[in-house]
Image 1 (tube, rainbow, N blue to C red):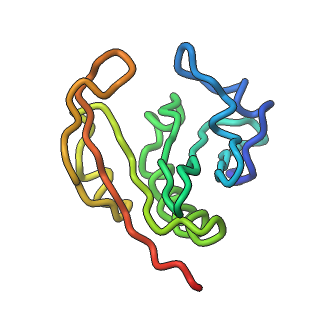
Image 2 (image 1 turned 60 degrees about the horizontal axis):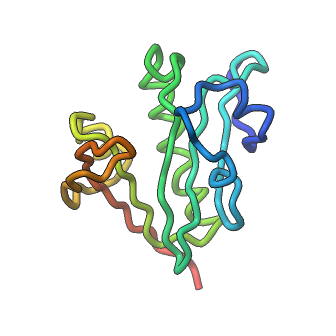
Length: 138
């Protein structure tokens, strides 16, 4: 059974984290973070880190569950992203990823390609920048 819940530190420690990541960013004030549980076990997480000025940076952890069930994860992301943006007042949500991830993935989530960022990744990787604009009620 699949369930979506607020991400906790306990959930995060059960998931494969990038080396050297500071988990405080996932829980910074004004940020949104959700966890997908399968039969009560954390299997996937994603959210939006608050960048201030109604701007956020989307993130997700590419877990083995994501690799095995990308369409399931995509469906949940597509449902949760507008809710997180609305609940937290994000007008612009951007996502950066290492070049090579198919743009179609981001297009299916409503993001538009904005550009390529050379030497942007933590190891100097070239990354692509995608953005989605949300209408936030006054």
